[in-house]
Length: 256
Ligand code: GLP
Image (cartoon, rainbow, N blue to C red; front, side, top):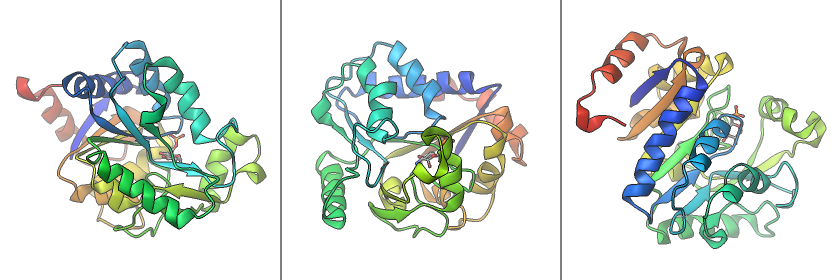
């Protein structure tokens, strides 16, 4: 796992955008796994400003709320449209986001998994992290082998996301999310975390035991993970000086 600590979120997002831009330029047919949440905003802002060619890029989003239509302002469909898709030249038919209104959810989830496989699998999967370590909407104690499925949100996650909905009672209880097994199948996972309320989750995910009590800790089992942090999110890491030293002394061919 490569840990990259930057002085602030803007600098970390800039570097993460450079990594993704490199992938898109090198492989114009790349398949990207996308995430939502406040953390991704500076990254999507950077990417949109880069004027990359997205025409052949395929995307699969991690998750969506169940029971709200794509036009709902707080749906992840709206989030992606507003914060990334409407600013780039991506083909709408190449963007995939779970359908929160699917009738037969298990069948829909199976088709999503098949579609990811048919696209050749995900080259780079973007991830944020919940304050409890969740990735996508894989809450604590999610199976580390799980695939795309319906999940019930914890009261804490609903509280955390209430800021987007105006009030907590408007936050849906259920979601469709890629599973942890689905995420682990991506060839490269890129996790972003900013702010002090992520510091504990990050320390546990990076330096703690692999446990479903911190779903992001499973990334320790993945061969290629890059973690972009600001100082506040890195605050509780025991080896942060080592991570800094490694980054500052990277051989040229490894530089982002
Ligand atoms: C939600 C999303 C996650 C995201 C998390 C953190 O639960 N499903 O993908 O990582 O929120 O969001 P934020 O970046 O707003 O802190």
